[in-house]
Length: 138
Image (cartoon, rainbow, N blue to C red; front, side):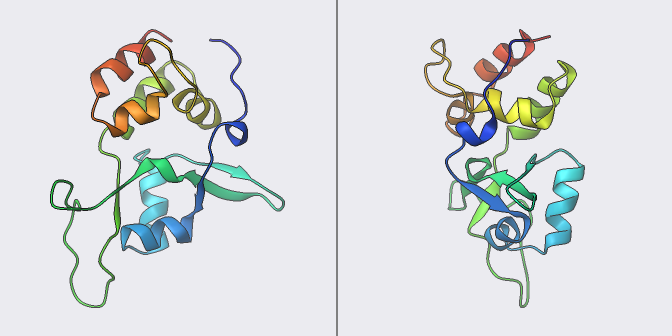
């Protein structure tokens, strides 16, 4: 495994747990569960350190990407959903020994063989190609 740049040098937009909750139309507790389940990852950054999640891990909700669970009552309608292929890719990177910071850096580092960044390829639905490269890190 080669040294990766720090995620702050690669990720252009970060969200806090409350920001993610607003985007997903859920409470902060649900976002913390998503983090615990490794469906999302984030790092502590800033001063004081605040748990931050790359905004690119969320995708807009529309007719082709409906939310995972419908909401009822006073819960605001979700504007975004967690990128579907993130969890499996994070799992492969974790198996390769990557910390969350290293996984975020890897996902946001340009890869000429894709071309582009793995996170953008995942957002475009190219999970197989990204995971193949992630497995090569094992």
